[in-house]
Length: 369
Image (cartoon, rainbow, N blue to C red):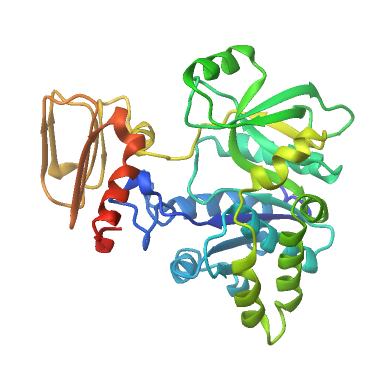
């Protein structure tokens, strides 16, 4: 077993409601708390399992919404209470990561922080560990480092990272490259060009950086946000924590880490990427769930008890809560059966499930959300 990475702290932002996975994922019980692959562990627990060998339980921190903090603590009982931070309201990834970074930096000024989503899948954990170890070595040299996924298809569902030249002179990071720019989700023709060029990787939102470097970048790019999280961190161990958090948090700019610092820092030459291929998926819709659970034994993936599902001449995915589901002669079907809601769609429309959530919200059916 390899040693822990010195001074590395993993931050898991656990937020969002996974609307493309409705009706299984709900605002009160979002996808990171669910076992969507039959692994016996939720997506959050699987994230925890693959990070602990790198940082230990003392180096792992989760920031989540107040609505989910108790469920997170229940699923991760080995974490110290103060390693699960509840944000009062969603402010996107940058405030969440910045606050946790500021708290970590107060306790360990030499810390390197690494942010990983709570609801992604990784098949090859050993290769993932190798990529993170390389990224930590590059981060120690002052770079903001991202782990770029080698694309196996021209997907339009992900943003891309354009790499440039190899990064020289950093021992322990032979695969690192400089980053030219980050690109938003492209149209299909552009995605094909990106993949064919060999210069682009999928942006999985994995960032590794020295805590002091991240806070310095934030001070240049988002000074009010930096000042806010530093003020909250300053009050964290004192009697006024809740008051300061309640006063400052709602005023913080709602912005993703990509837009806040990754894109401008890349333009200035301060970002590096470690390319890797370890069977990554963001489980962004039911088509992705099907990819994760399908085996070579058939064309229909099943989440739940397979004994209550009958499928004849059909392919796709069925998610069952226990009621009998029968599918006959339908290709690429998506059937999701929960006690209070039934979804029937196709793989090709899986990315659009969020529109149904919007429909029921507009109809006043908060009970379904």
